[in-house]
Length: 273
Image (cartoon, rainbow, N blue to C red):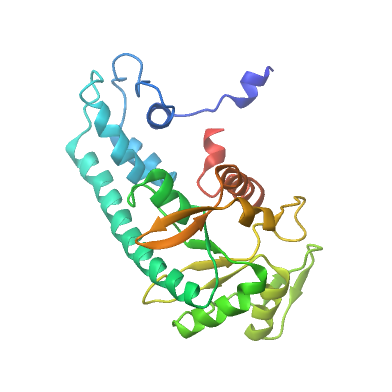
């Protein structure tokens, strides 16, 4: 068995079409979604289902229709177009609300002299994709300095955020399971031993992760958190000055998050490798 045999994915024609369209959009060249006429056996409902599975239906909506005029036979049925359009519009509206609320929250934190770095989707959506509808987000992630965390915690609680139910079971750095006595003990354990704490506000951001590091102490990676702050760049979010990771640190964080913590399974990445 050759290396190419090991790493050649077994993908459907519909999945290949999606991946080729993504390459076409983000490779910087003029590559087409398909070389030659569109395969006649493409099942467009399967294209939509694959895009949903990979959580990229909104992105596919912005990419795929652009190729219809130039690609022979790339005739996307109207119901499929409407379905992926609906996924895009829903994502746009949800993200528009999230980023409006995030801007207000960053302002409150700034008044308390707490700087914020936007992480993952909160960084990518407005400043890399530059389209609030293109990236679905399960949560909003921000980074504060460890020494500022208690101030940030007070600001969030005063703004109506609460800790979600985290359960009584925690995992120590030694990977040993530990049962704690009550929710207060769990919150204190997270503040002391973890890398982030979750907050929720049903009126604004329902799933907010406030990080003070991007890896736990027990991880095999030595991440210079202070270096992240030194290399961070300024951006403008709805009139509010924010910080984002440098491109190199952004790639580092996403790689660690998806590969180490989620084993490439969060967005079914293992299906295309």
